[in-house]
Image (tube, rainbow, N blue to C red; front, side):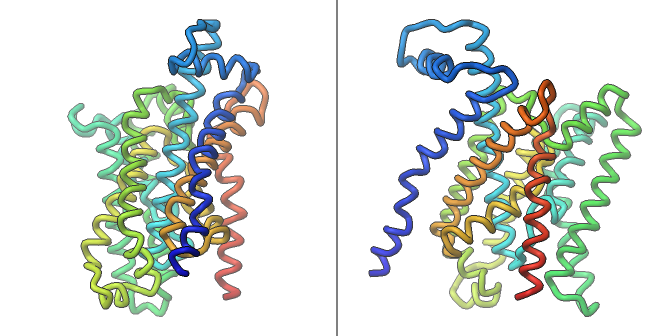
Length: 344
């Protein structure tokens, strides 16, 4: 009976490819320039070899090289950020945990800017590697601050949140200092726009990095669904169930940091995705991670694709940073989570 209930509860997963394909098609069809849906379908059919017809070269270039690649990277980034938030919330038993709040995103931004602007690594280290190093340093700092603050009378959840805010502010200040000292006026303007979340420069080569990391994060989370369920009751309970707590934390937090760093190196710091999406999916599919992990990945991908579409069309003739759109949705959701947590 339990197995049958689980199968029925996961039956909607068969719709996941269709939902993701519909979101990608929507992200490709809608944009600054109005292109008929029939033209979009014709271009996609021609590029994938389904038809031999040759569409207009300008429309084909806009649809294939700009919109579809952008929508695909947005889907990969949304899935990565949502899964990172889900993993951190489960491991830390903190409803407000997510890469942006815990300073991982800010640290990744500092690492990427240090490589791109200050020349850290002398050209040997890539932006993704610099972002990953910054993300790990940021989370390590937050962990040290949280451990040092124990015994102050503040609850563990409050300690982690305060340490994350302190780490975020420090790394944001470091990023601003690097830009002020090393970047020209034109570089500073471009980097500040990028730091708010920008997919305008995304092309197909970026997918070679974004897609494998998103699939890696999904695979690692699915492999550790029982571990994530066990951490719901605390680290001691997980250890009592035979789980190697230290190894699980290293693998899962390392994967979350890697996924966040890759997204930041490609599209900048996009906040609130890791906070909003996991809570929404818990409300829809429950708290069991066997269903929650794939649901969160799918919802994160769809959410960021739709946010990217809104950022392109909300102001005619101007493209907003995608982080502005996610913040407009995520900030009220953040307030709701805090109020509900206090009532409980």
